[in-house]
Image (cartoon, rainbow, N blue to C red):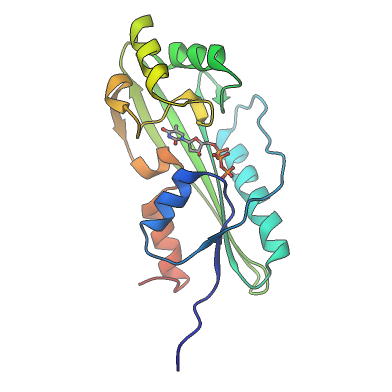
Length: 194
Ligand SMILES: Cc1cn([C@H]2C[C@H](O)[C@@H](COP(=O)(O)OP(=O)(O)OP(=O)(O)O)O2)c(=O)[nH]c1=O
């Protein structure tokens, strides 16, 4: 007799999150939540990413009450403000200038839901990233190589990161959009993986 696996849904349009979750070896499907994220100026990035992760997970969990649903949200925090996805190339340039030569914090919020089991788990993880001093030529070279408009803070550590990043502290997967160490712990506690 074959055992039915619990259904697991990733509530995300992000190819990075799909890739990262795939590394855990848990079968899953993707359902993208139709929600408007809160992306205003904030002094409290932890609360903002937790709120957005829950928005995405709750929207999908409502429609799939018997599935496990995971939502996440990532932001870059510097100078008391959250840098989300740049609207255009000019904003991406401005973000890279602001991050140049300095350390910022990347926050990812995760929300795991199972409606019919009444399970709601919310976690936030922070990692620090220090940028190299970037001159104009390096910024242009980076932007020519990497599509940054769909990335918080206008950069991707996983794509030509050596051009712009001096060092990072804490979880790398957290910076890319899903803190796998923390997630693995939660999924193990919920007996979804060994
Ligand atoms: C800082 C950083 C962010 N990112 C990405 C991860 C996220 O996809 C994106 C932040 O945007 P999010 O709004 O967190 O996610 P998303 O819109 O891509 O997907 P969804 O809301 O459907 O889950 O930035 C990187 O890929 N590398 C990095 O180094």
